[in-house]
Structure formats: structure tokens, C-alpha cells
Image 1: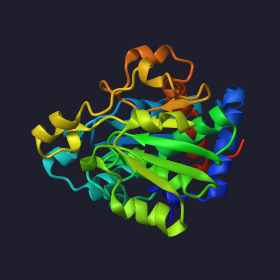
Image 2 (image 1 turned 180 degrees about the vertical axis):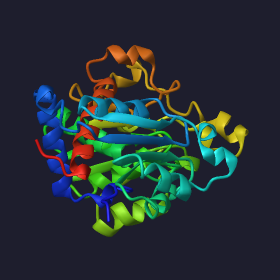
Image 3 (image 1 turned 45 degrees about the horizontal axis):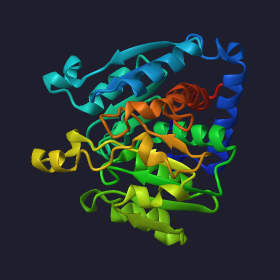
Length: 306
């Protein structure tokens, strides 16, 4: 059976650390890896729109000397004709060596993996998981701080539907001495099941608040998220909550000089473009890191070593 990555917990801490080390080596010497996946094919099956994740996967495979096929929206696949996702996956796994799949329904990549003859990477399923974004975040934190333990991280915005938040909380809960600060409107709090499984069961301290400015001085990392219009059933609720937090240079006045600001992107207006010039803004570095960590993961799942 092929190895699939559906959830970040499908990887051990040692495997995550190994992937980060490989990504660091790729950054240091990209030429060494330029033919690592020669004659291998990646299929990108995106049933939901994406810019960074899809192009990051494609750039990763091309940078490894492989090739890419796939589609960027469900309407351009045979699912528009009524074909099941299972049949689509079974078909594509006859053509490709590895599949990256995004789907709006939670659990769809797990179900799809039952029909695949090649490894499947979950590239985001609804409001559930986004393991490769989490690997991107972990690589970025490691490059910014030199470690994956002993810091305070604040998650701000949509913590209810934010699959990137759920995955990163699960991942960081396996490292030592991390304090979690959860900043959101009451309606968009981190789901109880995530808090129970990742934090409470392990006795990990966390703080919940609606006030970003009151906690920003204590943060080593601030992970901003957008309020996701596509996850709301009621547009009135979205309009009421969408501007709950807008990070501006003024709000960073009392933040640490060593603060790192992350965002999985896309942003709407939750981070002012004026913050882009702040040396603490790390989200564009995060975008670049996504390519390198996906290169490392593709090689791992294909059993390729350089």
C-alpha cells in the first residue's frame, strides 16, 4: 500500500524534523536535487480554487526534474459529468506517481486514498486539515527561531474553520514548552475537539481572548488568518465578523522586536500592506518555504534519496 499524508499526525516528530532538514539542504544546494524526480509525474487534483498550494506543488515537482498533470477546478474534470471522486482518483493513479489533492469536503482525501495505487497528499480538505501548509509553517518557524519549542504563539482570526490553524496546533502540541494564545471572536473560537485532543489531554497551557492588542507584547510568533467567506452559511455573519482583526503598524508598537508574523495567505485585509515593510513580517518567506518542504515530502513519499 502507498504511504499517504492526510493529516499532520501521519508524520512522526522525527519524520517532520527529517523533512525540515532535507528542505534546509535543498535551500542550501538546489542544484543537487534538480534531477531527483526525473521521469516521475505529480498529479494536482484541485476540486477547490488555490493559488499558492497548487503552484507550490507544481513548482516543487518541476524543480525536482519531474513533470505535472492535473486540473485546477472541479468543473474541468469528469466529476462535472457525475463521476465519483473514487473513480477519478483510481483513473489518475494509473497515470501519475503521486497525487496532491484539494477538496472542499472534510475527509475527501482520506476516502480518495482508498482507491489510489499511488501516494496521496492532502492539499487541504474543507475546514479540516492542511498538512503541507503545516510543514511550511514549521519550516518557517524553524528558520525564524532556530527551534520548534520554547516559545509563545498567538493564533488570530478564524480559528473555527481555519484548517491551517487546526493542523499547526496539532503539530506544535508534540513539541515542548509552547504556550498557545487563541485570539478570535466568540463565534470563531478553536473547536472544542481540537482543544481536547491537542491541548487539554496533554496538559498544554493555552489562553483564549478576543483582544489581540492586550496579548501581542507576550508573543514570539503571531499567526494571522483571514475570516473565510467560503466557510460561512450566512453572509450576514461573515460581514459582521470579517474585519474583527486588522493588523497595522500601530498595533505592533508594543510587540517584541523578535516577533515573527505568519499568515497562510491569501489575505483580504486582516494584515495592512504597510506591515509588509516591517522586518518582522515573515509571510512572504513562508510562501517560498512551501516549495522547499513540498519538494522534501514528494521525495520522501516516492522513496527517493539524494
